[in-house]
Image (cartoon, rainbow, N blue to C red):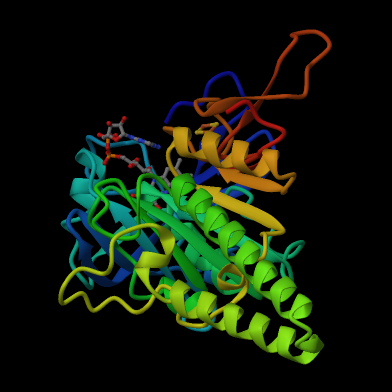
Length: 347
Ligand SMILES: Cc1cc2nc3c(=O)[nH]c(=O)nc-3n(C[C@H](O)[C@H](O)[C@H](O)COP(=O)(O)OP(=O)(O)OC[C@H]3O[C@@H](n4cnc5c(N)ncnc54)[C@H](O)[C@@H]3O)c2cc1C
Ligand code: FES
C-alpha cells in the first residue's frame, strides 16, 4: 500500500494515518450479487458500519487476489442500518472489478469504510436538490435522494440505462442518452437546457393566454382557469419523454413515466442546490451550469486511489485556496472529498 511521506503505519489490520484515525478492513458477506445492466452489477454486503454511512461516502474493496494489493474505491449506493447492509452498484472495468464480478452470494470480500465526506444532505434536506449523474456516477445519488425531502434527478447514459426502475420512485427524473434512444439526445446538461427552454416557451404561452383573457374582459377567474389548464397540460406533457426534447419511449418499453410523482422539476422550478457525480467533463459542465445560475453545486470527484484514507497523496486535486508559500493548495479526494463545493476546486 502506497504510504508516501505521511505518517502511516499498518498494525493488526489497522491503517493508522496522520489524522490519528483507525480504519479497519473487514470481511463482508455477499448478500446478493445481480446483473443490473451490461457490465453493471448490484452487490449487497453485510458490514459492521452500515449505520455510520452518509450518502456520497465510499468503501475500498479488495478482491482477495494477492496480485491486487490496492483496493478499489466504490461508492455506497444505499446503506440500511437496521440490517447492516450496504449496496454497491459498479461497472466492470479492469482486473479489480472483473474479479469482484465473480463473487458469489455467501462468499466474503474485504472492505474498509465508510470513507470520505459525503454530500451535504443535512444542510439541504428541505431544499429542491437536483442530483445530476452520468456514467457510473449515478449510484451514490440514490442514497442522497433517499435522504432528501425534495430530490429530483438528471441522469445521462451512453445508451443502455440502469437504475431507471427505481430513480422515478425517489423523485422526478430527467434523462439524456448520447444516442438519443431515451430522453434528450446528448448529455445531461443538454437535458437541463432543453427543460429550461421548454418552460420558457410554456410560461410565455401561459402568460399570453392570461393577458388575452384579461383584455377580452373575461375577468380574473377565467384568467386563472386558463392558467391552471395551461399548467395542467404542461405537467401532462412532461409526463412523457417527448417533453424533454427527446424521442418517445421505445416500443414495448416498460419504463415508468419520467414523472411518476410530479414535483418541482415538472413544475418548472429552479433547483436550490445541485449535487453531481460522474466523469470530469460532465462535472465541469454541470458546475458551469450551476455557476451561471448562481446555484450552489457540490461535485463528487472520481480519481484513481491507492490507500483511500488520506495517507499516500495519490489522489490529490488542486483547490482554489492559494497557499502563501507554494502558490497552490491540494486536497486529497479520498479524505477531504470526494465531495467538494464546485467553487473551491479546480475542475
Ligand atoms: C470515490 C470513488 C467512488 C467510485 N464509485 C464507483 C461506483 O460506485 N461504481 C463504479 O463502478 N465505479 C466507481 N468508481 C470507479 C472505480 O473505482 C474504478 O472503476 C475501479 O477502481 C477500476 O478498477 P479496475 O481494477 O476494475 O480497473 P483498472 O484496471 O484499474 O482500470 C480500468 C480502467 O478504468 C479506469 N479507472 C480506474 N480507476 C478509475 C477511477 N477511479 N475513476 C475513473 N476511471 C478509473 C482506468 O483508467 C482504466 O481505463 C469510484 C471511484 C472513486 C474514486
Ligand atoms: S488515495 Fe491515498 S491519499 Fe487518497
